[in-house]
Image (cartoon, rainbow, N blue to C red):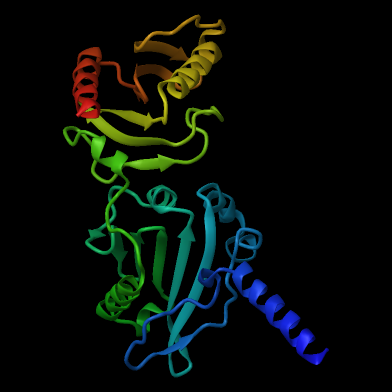
Length: 289
């Protein structure tokens, strides 16, 4: 009987280990010479992220946040650095939250997929991870040591160091560098317009937005276009055919939409139709390659 209970307990313990993935255990942080690693924070998950970042949690959850690991680095009694490692469901969602918080005028560096730095912080993206390395007391830290710590963290993380494939479809001519974004949530104020990539452009000193998305099937793209057509035009569209459409969206200005196969893309606030036609032709060619 005693052996039976031991076997039952062992099976129960094993099932509990399998229930909790290894990624939820303590994450490894790099050793830094002369610094002590402190891991007093819990591992945060979707149901308790508010306890740490409060109102900002909703945006992270919108990008399918999975878990957050935190470590501090101290010298003596002084905490010099804090490292936050946010893991998201996949590379695309991690890029989404990273791109939502970066600005085109930041000082970008080659770290992971991409990073940026200031005197007191280094933030970077790698695979499904969005990482923040921050100085807690600027008077006591070295910018070189801060960057070395960020590089050491990056070296321990698995994952690809490339942007999602859709980013490569944005034409470089006229684009504001590092303005690309992935929008997991509503686009143009419509709940059904999810998963679009956007980038900012300038022509004749006027800014406009290029947005695009690839669906799994042409019918899915057609359905989204039909819903938007009915939403804006206040009438059912009938049987839509592939091509380009112009909408006077009362909330978002003039919207050009182009549908071709599984792809929907378009322009917001672009009043130069010649530029629109040229960019559309080039994009259609690129999508067909």
